[in-house]
Amino acid sequence: MNPLQILQKHFGYSSFRLEQEAIVHAVLAQRDTLVLMPTGGGKSLCYQVPALCFPGLTVVISPLIALMKNQVDALRLNGVHAAFLNSTQSPPEQSAVVDAVRAGTLKLLYLAPESTFLKELPRYNVSLLAIDEAHCISHWGHDFRPDYLNLAQLRTLLPKVPVIALTATADRQTRKDIVDKLSLRDPAMFVSSFNRANIRYTVEPKRQSSERLVEFLRSRRDDSGVIYCMSRSSTEEVAAFLTREGFDALPYHAGLDRTLRSKHQDLFLRDEVKIIVATIAFGMGIDKSNVRFVVHMDLPKSVEGYYQETGRAGRDGLDSEALLFFSYGDVIKIKRLAQVPGNEAQTEIAFRKLEQMAEYGDLRSCRRRFLLQYFDETAPQHCGNCDICLAEHELVDATILSQKVLSAVTRLKGRFGAGYVIDFLRGSQAARIQEFHKKLPTYGIGADVSKDDWHDVIRELIDQGYLAKAEGQYPLLQLTDRSDDVLRRTSTVLLRKSLARPVELESAAVEEATPAYDTSLFQQLKDLRRQLAAADNVPAYIVLSDATLQ
Ligand code: ADP
Ligand code: MG
Image (cartoon, rainbow, N blue to C red; front, side, top):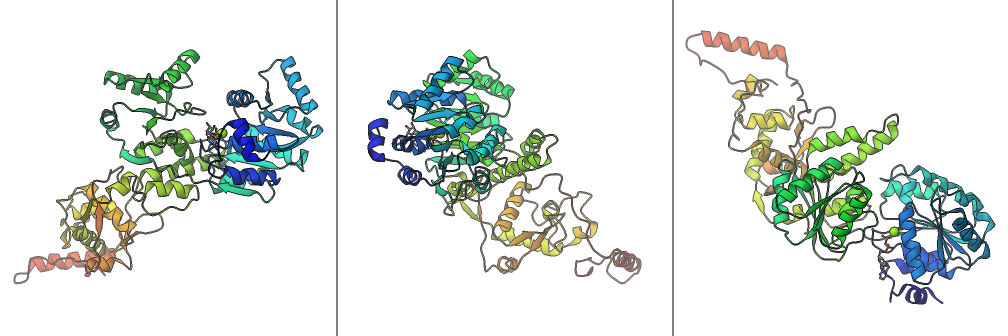
């Protein structure tokens, strides 16, 4: 039988999906293969179909014993001779499986990565090794499992057997790790698109997240969805809060009593409860197609994690939404939790991942593009289905505001950061504003504009290359080659209004640099001014413009 016939006969599907067919062919040609396909894409068939074509045994490594059992049960229902071998089985059960392997009747054998049976494999006729959830072998992956390192020996144990590694989450670094650690030989790579076009990505500031959550849920009365929280206690608090507000919501986390936990899960899966408020313990292996929204109350630890969790929305292809409540406070809080004591390298990776997630939260360009680029996928500039792209049509002309910023930066000689420039524009009386700056012509010309709005303008100018942040210790604002275009009005600056404004541009931690003017000259000028003021027939003061201070 050819692969298509096997697909139809044993699995009851009429055709291959996405790249399944090409993958199956590569495996049948006995090439090492790396498959990257989003969750729900159909990775299992990529080794299950070849398993039925090959003469010998296909060994599948899978991380979760519970999922292993489900897969084997499903295969058996389809008349496929499959089994798993693990420590939950009684000795007689285990030896029955080993007997089947020895007899050569078994087609698929599922093993956990820590299995001692790996070492026995060279004795048998193994045709294919399938490593599911292969990202677990990488420190860089978001779900590193030390047991997976055990799999590195497979290449030596079974040098001739082709390997197929499968994962839904692998950036470039993780992929490289998988190839290295499993010693894949010139692997055929299959990367399916990670774009989930029916999911709308939105970010809102965390400041009023409970009020906003209630509004959000009111607008989605009949929809079912998952709300993720960082801690077990907050899942319970949020669920209780939503219940008080009249919603149907139940908590779910690993600390709940086993029966209660599966009861909550079942009620949700059966649509008897619309909302589940969960930690990330919820979701692995859950296949509910009509999840309309996934909300994150707290910042996820990594972009992969976020992508996975939001990927649980809209499996049925209908419009769905992924909403994240973001604040920089979370970054700091989660950084503390993400530290891996005694392991600097791991801590650094965790921080880097968290910062990438923060970058997503603070994004000013298409969020889908960011996610896809994270998985090394090219994407158009605008997706038309994220908050940023949707806000795009509401553009306001911010050229005059931009000119004010650029003039202020010119006056301040590029020696100050955004906070100072904004205070200067708004005519702040703050002590840190230097007296002579208060005399400059642009001081206070933007008192009517809020700090947040000024931050938006500045951010936009930086995004569009009209303004730069200096490299180095202090993010000083400086002019660029293009600033003149705005100052002379040959360019118009459009600002996306009504953008969710997630954070303040700069945290309080950002210090201002000391200006580098010549203090002795400044003192002389002050003295001169005093003398002039004392004289009779001359003006009472002179303006200390920045030119004076050259
Ligand atoms: P993954 O491991 O990539 O998350 P699975 O292998 O568990 O995905 O498959 C997800 C779902 O898609 C399963 O219900 C599976 O039966 C279904 N599926 C996979 N391939 C096909 C296909 N060619 N045609 C129809 N359904 C498929
Ligand atoms: Mg899978």
